[in-house]
Length: 123
Image: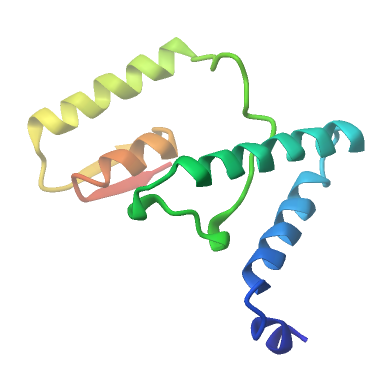
């Protein structure tokens, strides 16, 4: 069946929608709330696609994975780890090591540092 579906131009969209619905409807929130949040996500996606003129940032259906609960008025920041990660990244960039061995940092911070310095994460 998969081979047959791949022949249709809408295959990627179908696969993306399946992934969206599978992920969105699998947690503790109510069906109607999730449906409304998904509708908002798809509306925002449509608006973004209309205004996005940069070919480097075109949306691919291979990577659509909505986080429908993340649209908030503000984003809370836990100050200890925020400042700790900023401080650590600054030290790594200042010292320019040939390789950075990171013990216990958040994966996000290690991911950023690893874009500039070969990094091994030890947890």
